[in-house]
Image (cartoon, rainbow, N blue to C red; front, top):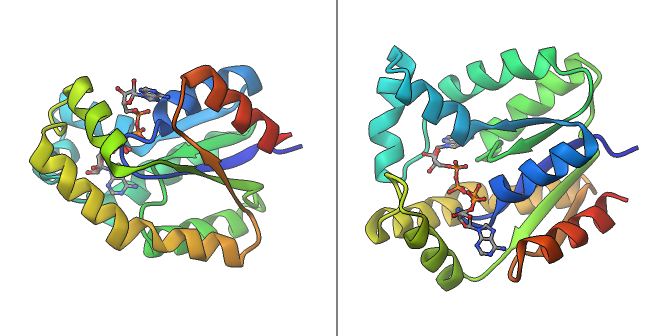
Length: 182
Ligand code: B4P
């Protein structure tokens, strides 16, 4: 059974939206590094203070911070998990690989949510979060192309990547994802 999943895709592709639905249906732990970081910012922890400025510029938070958050949560998950927004670069993917090897929890499937930039910009401006203004969104897209998109090749080479078109209504996209998960 497919129970260890990663959602990959540009900002606003709907990773968070779809992850919430799939995790409810499949009883998986939903691990969103974006949500976890925003919770640290809201709680004004030292980690949150360090992350806030970077997030508001659309830059990635340091690997060290993100890994420390993910590692604790992943090790407690025994029912399967869905990683949403993590890994975000090759170095995070390598660290994740090492961690998962240690705990004998291989990734079953990486789902790439594919979508055009202009749809993303429209969606995110409509949402209006602190990092959802056009200048920051354009930077997040650049950071995605430069740092995150090499993961497409990385997971394709490992033979565990599949793609879904993420344009359309939320329910239809969920169905496509469900078909891929099987
Ligand atoms: P994230 O929180 O991961 O956010 P995201 O990529 O912008 O959004 P996502 O793809 O989840 O879209 P969503 O479903 O919300 O990252 C934010 C920041 O955190 C990063 O820039 C970075 O600074 C930091 N960060 C996070 N993880 C990190 C890591 N691993 N390493 C370093 N830094 C990290 O959908 C977006 C909008 O579209 C919503 O309003 C939604 O309602 C709408 N929508 C979704 N599906 C739709 C559909 N089918 N049709 C119409 N609208 C739709």
